Image (cartoon, rainbow, N blue to C red):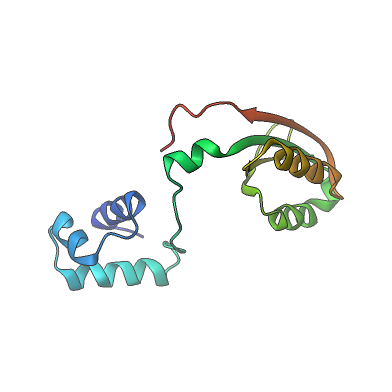
Length: 142
């Protein structure tokens, strides 16, 4: 699948996806064309799906986040996931084992919007019940 050099490249891109190919090549001790070809191969194979943004510390401090544990009605699981994906403040969705089937991570800029989003989740067809925990403080995130 991927080589040790690919793993190092992915690690560098995870830290800063905007690092220039020349800088990546220097850090990996490879030629610029080799790094460019590796990136293209990782993109075309689907290992790199895309590039995104990481919010800065002050903006993150202004966000209100919650983990919403979701129990689904088993016959509506596909529909439920599609509906959750449409909710703009649901930023992550995990399938889990145990009593609850899913964990949705909700991020908003106010408690009102957070509460409204959690209510929308609970009202979706296919949702049996939810249990929410508001995140008070993030100690670290990798």
